[in-house]
Image 1: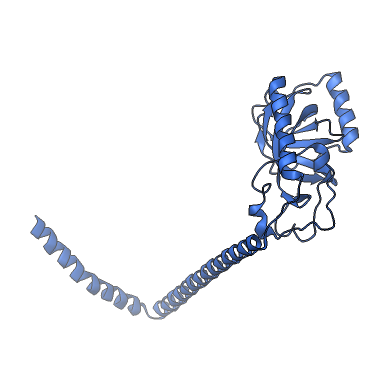
Image 2: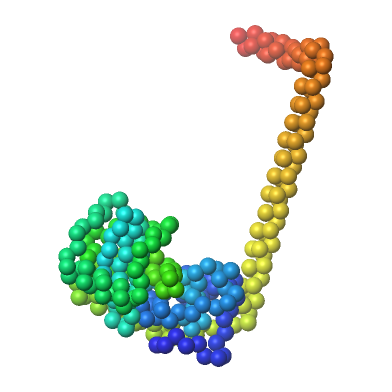
Length: 278
């Protein structure tokens, strides 16, 4: 289904996203769908890396396809996934410690070069913060289900991998394709619609949350300011006392005498208590 929003499509505020069927779930898409996802001005400041299919907000995606290229570098792994949708998608993840770099065959190198030419990406740049994923058993030709978040590298879409499963039988592969088709038919094929009541409720909850958040931040700021003022005053008193004692050593002696006088009754009470217990 082409991702061309009609003129009457309604895009709801970010505070309503929790009510969306796609926001808290893995959106089952194809590589062609991912490249066709839209960004809308004003939403990136509220939610980073947010895209839209029709008016469905998308942040987590799931795909099924064949690995047609697999490169392993020092700190990352890069794959190209082909799901027969007419497009490929680059999949990137951090490299797990137990994975080793294996020499690729001439066939693997040829497939990698072809897939790179199709996607227009060299992917030679390391992206920090990638999730390490164990890719044991994954190779060119593996049929997999992948889940991750969306990213952009050199103006091309890519998936930052979070999870991966190898589909080892045709039964598993058919079930995965059927699940994706059902999701697109039941969820993505129609626009997301909220009633006015649902929108107002979401806005009230968001306003309440923001008010509580601001009140908490203000309380924290005032507490930090009070503690800072106490610390500053204590330092000021300590400097004045040190200055006075430097001018007249007897001040320190009198201070010690007062401290001793204050502590003497406490020691005497403790001694009487200890004798009574004995």
